[in-house]
Image 1 (cartoon, rainbow, N blue to C red):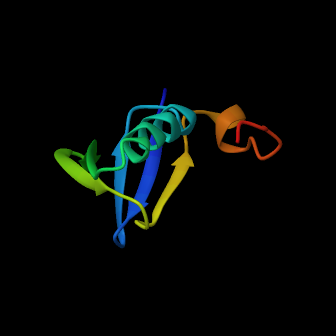
Image 2: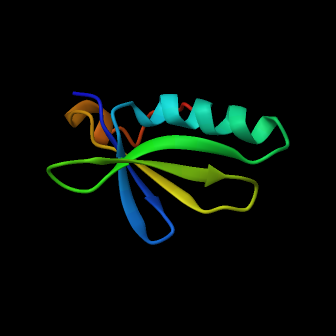
Length: 79
């Protein structure tokens, strides 16, 4: 199962993607030089669709919880 938890504005959101794919998507938004929206899910059980505004200077944390080899992959060099 692909899943990444996102911490943004003191809240937790969920996206059914690997963190590496989200990093690419966020970097593409930032490369435009304008703010952009990232579609995510919010809540537990019945998820609600939410959009996060991504722009330079915004703090966002990604935690890949897809499966054991991705959530513990601190030795991966994908930066």
